[in-house]
Image (tube, rainbow, N blue to C red):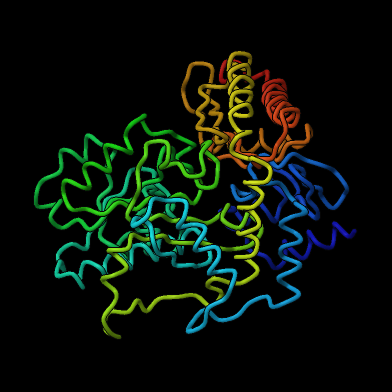
Length: 439
């Protein structure tokens, strides 16, 4: 293992996402960690140190690393072919995966699957489909979208224009789709008729927002949103890139409120977290508007659309859900995680609030008086680095520590994860005891 060489090459040539590159190159707030191996809920760095994968490798991994069934499915497919074009050709794994996904919803609802590469492209595809649908059905005025404050839907230009995080998206806003951002359902109900008449679709992260520091929506909000859309002839796009595949305790977040969207955007856990793969699921009546000749076809796609390795991994992941009864085991894990997080909130004065939805949780750190810390202090980042000493890896959103492990995590491993974060918080306080009046 040549850790020094890998880090030097990285700092000389690589460009990381959502990263202050000048700090990264200086090794602040910590030297880069080079991850080389995974096994179950654990990751191993190039120096042989083991860590709980506390954010499921940026919210992707479902059944743990190096799962034998998924590994074997990829190996078996690799022995046949890795990738073939989906432009004008079919392949067995894509056919089977699309069939399985559609079977998860009632007949004559989400009947079609358009494959792409990641969450951003799954959303981008839904937006382009929706615009073209409105034009081809004689509604060219309905080309506006409604999204929500602090939402995150990806970084491609169209998806970015729907994002509600100003720091990420304000400078690109004028290049994307026309969109109106709202605070919630009350704002939606208060919209003028003229705005509604121009609206094609509403997009939302169901049940809980991710990048908005893991912030849940009020219970019942999604069902009411579906009703509002139906009343006004507006389509509903659900971005389940984060919440899909068991994260909330059910296979899909929308199932908690028995809502079926017009578009369902999936990625991350679709392949079990193994390979880039995304899907945009669509109602049959929307798909039908694209039939009838070359002038109505959807001219959109990606080179690796429906790649055979990714689809093989996706099918294997669904088999693991069945064979290991993944969803059936979640209630006990969710309850234990809730208990541990409640204890952490009670014991640690810097924990302002814990927000949880299933196996998704955020631990927000604030000063003892309840005031947010100065962003420049980057306390969430520093605490996350300290957690490495307790075998925990995670990545914060501002000063909210994200807890989103693989669903396969054991009760004992949840304990290690939560106690490690608690110890890191205490260590940070101890190192800054002279600032006690601030902390």
